[in-house]
Length: 112
Ligand code: FES
Image (cartoon, rainbow, N blue to C red):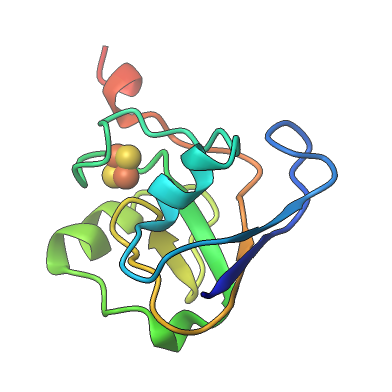
C-alpha cells in the first residue's frame, strides 16, 4: 500500500506524519482518517480551495485534475505546479510527499 508523507505544518501537525493508505482513497479521506485535520469547508465536493495541498513527490501517479479543480486551484493561496485539491486527488500505487500550504483561502467566508 502506498505511503503518504505529510511534511510538518505549524498548526495541523508540527512533527509531520507518515501514513499508509489503500489505493483509490482520496488524500483528504486518508488525512482525516489519520487525524491530520486538513480543512475541507465544502465537504470534499470540489467547491472550495481549503483542502489545497502541494504534492512534492509522486504527483504523476495521480489522475489529472479536472477543469473545475484547475479553476478552483487558480484561486488558492500559494498555488504551485504541484498543487492539487486533496479531496479530488486519488492515491494510486506510488508513495507521495505532501506539503500543506501555510494558509488557505476560504472562498465562502470571503463572499460575505
Ligand atoms: S474540500 Fe472543498 S474542494 Fe476539497
